[in-house]
Length: 328
Image (tube, rainbow, N blue to C red; front, side, top):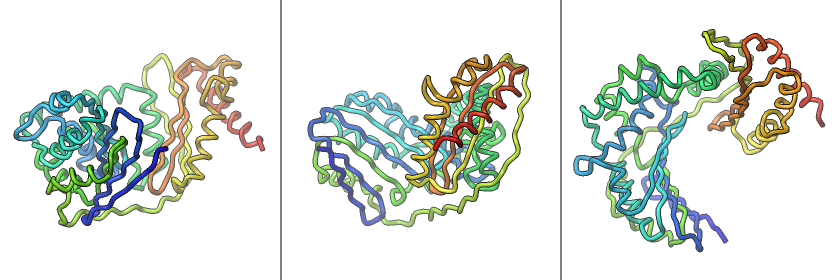
């Protein structure tokens, strides 16, 4: 039977272990409250940029991937609006060594100036690709419109202007401030005792230091009506999207959004998919995105259609929402 065990270190660092007695593999994740919402406007995108730089290694270890390969671990990371998380999957016998490696790389990351400038080109390339993706633009503008005036109104990747403006000094300062053990969480799943993990972390002095961490604050969110946003480009397909926000990310509201999503636009038999196909307006790329944050949740459904059929497709979308409202 799987069980959850936790340990809070005196400096605030939280360790969570999901015990999997029969498992032969292990999962590790180290997370920080650093994302789009924690950035100043002039350095928007710095959390995602920093995520890339962590994989450039330390003064003594330059190839993070090879270091993990030596212990049989696969690693990755992702940045969201309110967090950055570093993960590893490895055999059970190399779990402690894999955790040690992440603790080392995340404490001693070296922001090398040459590597920093080289990576700027990679980040800009990602940005340009995202700006050429109609589906991504629908989601981006839905978030900016629904959360306008609130810290959640942000993009993880930033803008071309901010990506070009961020300096290595900006990043070093942000790294030292936001990647603080007191505000971080370490998740582990595997079949070994909690004491072994505690011992591993306590041997890394940086992770148990008692120096102050930046205070985290979360503004109250109040949903409001927002106008429709239209982006005009010369394309063969138009991407149509509809988004809703909720005041909190409570379990009840997340469940409600999930049910709403399943009925409206998930799966082959969803109401919206059936209507669009029957009326000859649907082409492809129908998807749903649901996210929950500290103060708010967001639901987005979007699909592609021919530009000339966009007004009718919006009508169909409105009617599908109406059909859902009539279901008891």
